[in-house]
Structures are given as C-alpha cells and as structure tokens.
Image (cartoon, rainbow, N blue to C red; front, side, top):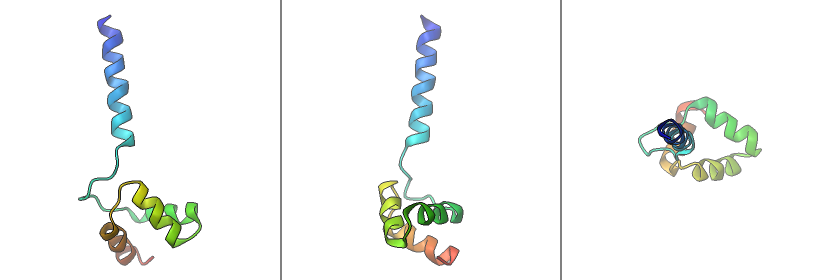
Amino acid sequence: MLMASAIFVLIAVMILLTTRPAWSSEQIPCWKARAFIAYAGSSAEAEKLAEKNGYTKSQIAEVRRRCGL
C-alpha cells in the first residue's frame, strides 16, 4: 500500500514538473524559439504558440532581439 502511494505521488510530481507553464523570469532559449517558428510556420503563429505555453509578450520580444529572429 505504501509503495503504491509513493509511486502515485512520484508520477504526479513528474507530470506537474514536465507540464507546468513557463515562469515569467525564464528566458526562452533560442533553440525553442526557432522550434516554435518551424512548427507554427510563421512568426505570428509561433508567438501565439509561445503565449499558449505561458511566455509573455516581453519574453517573446526579448528572444527576438537576443536571437535575431
């Protein structure tokens, strides 16, 4: 019983850590910004996708400046 509940808690923690939205203090890595653009097909759609993933407009503008996008 204890082992099953420990496994359940560990799985729940893993899910929460891997699916959490971005924190406002995080920078978007250049590789992730390029991946958003490649996946979405355009910069405008990539911006919408980034916002859905929890990034702010200021973070998006900063990554464009920093990575030359």
